[in-house]
Image (cartoon, rainbow, N blue to C red):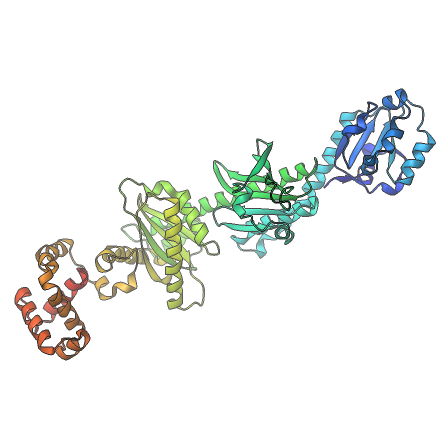
Length: 543
């Protein structure tokens, strides 16, 4: 969007400029300057240009302006400003012509330099654009810390469309979320397009680099087979923080391109958006460091007193009253250092928990405690189901971000305050230890699902002995039905009839198989501990 003729004439610099015709067209907008100091200059002029001339061409060929007036482009001109240096006055017939078409005809003082005149207009345009982007007018006290930057993004987009009359989009790479300046963007958004097509087109296109510094480029749909899309164009600018692309800003030109002054607006919008993402990145980094420091302090060997934890939380500006869910993430591939993938972990978390507060703290190079805010008033069963569902999505995202990693997860379903972080982490660790033995086919283990096994401290060498002594005979095909019968027999409360009914076999068959198992494993059915050991062994060995 350009600037109106009347707006620049109100500026102190232009107070000696005199309008001699076309007063009714002072609200015309212009999108740039053009010079007319050659008799055929009008051949290269475009619509909405502020044409300026020293009058030299008119002094050499007096009918130059008359020829231009007969050209259709004349009526598209925003205004004509002339110095009375080479001609003493503008002929009345020209004045009448400008009045007829309501095109401002302006006399420029002889002392005015072209460069100064154009610079003044550029400064006015930039000042106006800056005033339009008053995103700091938002009241941060009324918004959550997470919502505030994204409200700023929405306001920047709305201001862009208001100023330029072109709809805009911002695509957040980490959350894969789209923000629009208005519903108009989607109305002009061609049906075959995907969001990614605006920076990585999947069709024939042409690309014009408009600003190498900002990597601002204009894309055009380039397929003559589709008449609807052929003139379609848009401008894309990546929003980078460091070497990482955080978002893409897209301005929909559709079938009319932006003007010279619109590029000022784009640059301001991009710089503001970049500042927002730098703020988001810095805030997240500081917050993560604070949580990691607090967790490290809270889980140290000699657990600090509650007063000490509260003091540490206060120093780090951490609210310990809130409740969180705790998830232990473990990476098992020895060739991967998980702690070196913090940004990838953050990206996976953003894509999964975009509407939820999340933090993470590395316990060592390959173990990380993921801390997720709990929803107040939600039933534990529903919260646990949602948490596991979200973790499945998170694991998918993390595998995409770190394809070389081998990840597993353990969680503690019950929400607890940060003051309980050590207890929650220990339970996650316990679930991580037992999970592979009790549920080897899974990747996400819940502490509560471990049941009574979570209370038992089974030495690793005992488990290895159990595997060494019993696994060969259990894997023997001759013993398959016997082992299966033994498992169902124990699950059925050592009831022969119920076992036979479940297995669809005769009760005597069950008795024979149990007698054989008793001989092989030397089971004393009257010994409760012996029975429990056998049940545990069958569970650990997954029979």
